[in-house]
Image (cartoon, rainbow, N blue to C red; front, top):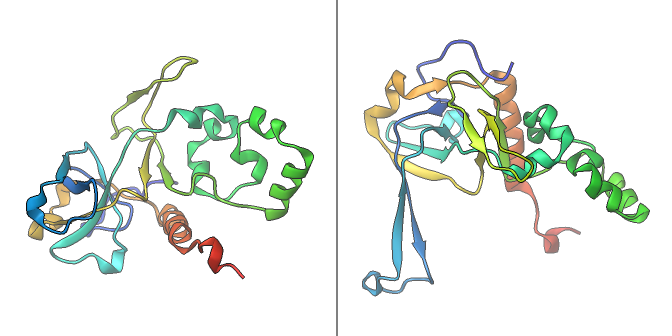
Length: 203
């Protein structure tokens, strides 16, 4: 079960919420003086956002959110993903992480190298949210033909902090809550995303 039946009134990691504005600066280069005016503030009002703050760290006035966005069209090139896009959330055999034609195009040496690595995440930046009747359907534009879906995804690289005070306690802002198992999968993948060592740190 991807989503929990019923909602808790407290915000939790992975909750889908509505009604929040997210903003972040865009700069061309480091700023020595704010009067240089070489930056702008990008403001978005996504239909849905997802709580990224750990459950034990959500405070009265501050929470981390990320926009819930549509799937990438490249996911549809992989038959293994099409059967269940939430497979992207879990570790998998290396041959499942690639479209069949891409995997078959690897040399035997490359296949062997990847197989020796074993189970790994594909698309480490993303976590997929299962379809649900409460989520609006949208169209994914593909060269092979457009597809209508209500699977969604989040990008760990796009996280925003907001201060909202008592509004964070409003029950109506939350529309869906992850099951305990799914929340654990989200916690595991985002932990892996941040724990990956730089190449020079690997001994």
